[in-house]
View: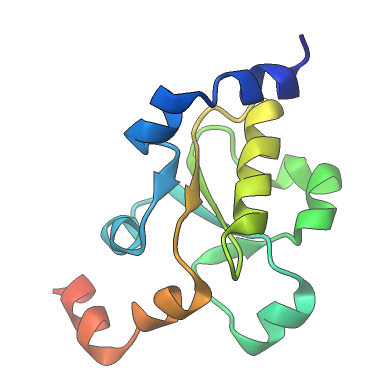
Amino acid sequence: MNELDQTLAAMDFDFLGNGEHAMSVDGMRKVLGNEHFFFLDVRADKEKEYCDFPFTKHIPLHELPGRLNELPKDKCIIAFCSSIFRGAVAYTYLRANGFAEVKGLTATMEEMVGAFKPGPLAKMQA
């Protein structure tokens, strides 16, 4: 069984039910600034031009295979995109390539942007 087969085989009901593979927008708020968490933006370059998050590393999903060496193996990588789908693909790909601590952000772009409005942002910095 190869790494991808093993990764998919581990994604059973219990795995998906416990939610440890995912992070919500509230979880994102709580860990921003914590050096152990590394946010990976897998959106296309065009998308990033319109909405950039300075706390992230941007590697478009289609470039990920050639750029794995840019990712830390000793941190928790949180993969995200504009609609959750590519973040989930990145999650699976990273796990299949030996990254042990990975999560997928379960927030849409609208929810992420909403986290940085004055009210929520003030609460994060308090």
